[in-house]
Image (cartoon, rainbow, N blue to C red):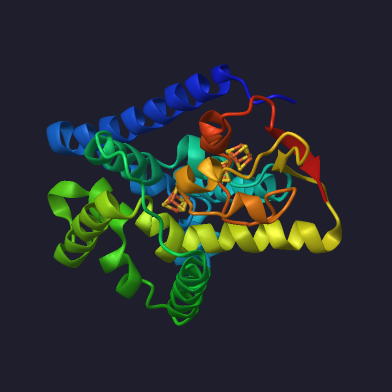
Length: 265
Ligand code: SF4
Ligand code: SF4
Ligand code: SF4
């Protein structure tokens, strides 16, 4: 299947829609003092609160039960469709993507972190996942929540200062390194990757970017423009679990029909 421009338009519309919903939640707290924020819908709450002693009781609260169901749905979908959540839905990913675009639209010389360093740095997020899971099991997940940028952004008027500082740092560093938080630190990305890996071990097919080796001239434009700094010229299929299926590689490829969306084991 050829990745066509309507996919880029659809992605843009869906991203803006979810960003708008987040902003409306925020406006709801500031203007009307509503009790719900976008943090109530964060799929990572399955880890932050999932080990709590009151977990089963709190599922009675329809809002939290919905969030947990939403979280597991995204994780299961990741097995078959990869990280579409990251490229279409997550407001923190969208904010980072467009802030980077805004500050770099005039820069002609794109630079990427060397791939051998990228591979090492990208492992840090699994450590963050492990630490947050341990804190949650120990019943002290509030320590991580104090630093969580989603929490800080979604509860802006009542935020923890540390979370706001981290959110600002992520945004500032993200001007120079695209999707900095997504690539190196996001624990939900690590969890999504673990589910993708599980699907691979079981042998489920997953949507991936496929490179037509006969058409490709190895110019490397795809890798240079990949927001997750993936080296697409390494393999026929993009097996890297960090691929968010944003389709930018296909958009930047000078050879039409070279990068397409396909199922693969
Ligand atoms: S990696 Fe994390 S922050 Fe980035 S888009 Fe995915 S879930 Fe959101
Ligand atoms: S941009 Fe297209 S032609 Fe160039 S290396 Fe990537 S897939 Fe090949
Ligand atoms: S490989 Fe292509 S689809 Fe995957 S993250 Fe990079 S640019 Fe996006």
